[in-house]
Length: 79
Image (spheres, rainbow, N blue to C red):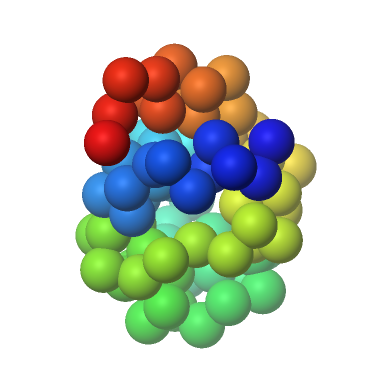
């Protein structure tokens, strides 16, 4: 599954991250704590300004119920 993630842009992952966080109705600060990243780094990830490590992505799926199926849908046909 790691290769699929590489096909996705940081912006796409950021959108999915934000959508997951908003569904959970938690703040960026709370999400950052769950994913064990700094608030600044979390904000950058959501805004597509920072790459998301696979380990962080797995935490997002686990703790934020990130829609991992969307990773595959969004990844198809993208450069």
